[in-house]
Image (cartoon, rainbow, N blue to C red; front, side):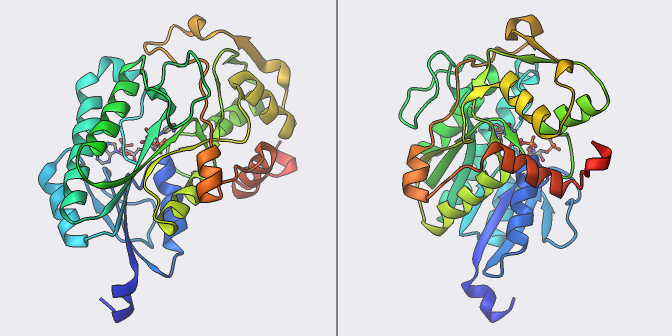
Length: 309
Ligand SMILES: NC(=O)c1ccc[n+]([C@@H]2O[C@H](COP(=O)([O-])OP(=O)(O)OC[C@H]3O[C@@H](n4cnc5c(N)ncnc54)[C@H](OP(=O)(O)O)[C@@H]3O)[C@@H](O)[C@H]2O)c1
């Protein structure tokens, strides 16, 4: 360890190979005042230039070992069982990761007095009366939402210094793993595939890098409590899809409006949802990037030229 490493902020990113974890890793790997350790379930990191360890957050001893070895100032937990439909049929696995895993992280963050920043979801609400503030009463309607609410409660009762960041529909240029919604719409329409999009799910999709910047502000301003982070506009998924198609000059006639119940999905969805970000705007200086600007950033990052549109 070099002497200036002692004054660096030590940041542990858990779930660093996930969609959000990747962008956070890229952001902090450029930070000269930070000492970074990335951990995730997989054997290897997607990035060669970062210190990485495999960690299963459901293994209490492994979580303890990583925490006591690295002694982070901040722990950012992005790891989760995120498949909403599978959470209905694989309840035990979803609970183990989303609740017991978070209990392990909270316990050892508390033990070493690290500040835990945890990502939660608008799925803790029933979607009857959104958009929601940080003060609104949670009432999940599906098992995934129940596990995310239980994860929040586990943190709040653990005694750890914490910030819970609730977000919804993440999109952005994560390079590895499953495509985000924007990329999926782009690929489907470009290949001439018809897509069925719901008109009755309303929320404010969140550009991943806006969330990454907000997480950084939380660290910079040492903010604790609960913060909502969401996109600039609250709209239906159908309208969001039209905006994507407009921007990338794709065939909008391939976008078929449908209702959520026609999809017959195993998990119910909160319909009238979305997150009000006034608190983050006031206390963190948060400002969501305009949708079209985010599409332009994605286009640039993914090297999408006019020729292959
Ligand atoms: N994506 C969204 O639209 C959205 C919306 C609202 C809230 N959120 C929340 O935001 C956070 C990040 O979401 P995301 O979309 O980035 O999720 P993601 O892409 O599914 O990434 C989650 C990461 O956690 C890892 N993981 C799963 N189980 C683990 C375990 N036992 N130990 C260690 N790592 C484990 C996953 O590895 P494997 O892939 O190998 O399982 C994956 O790399 C989550 O808390 C999610 O609930 C996401």
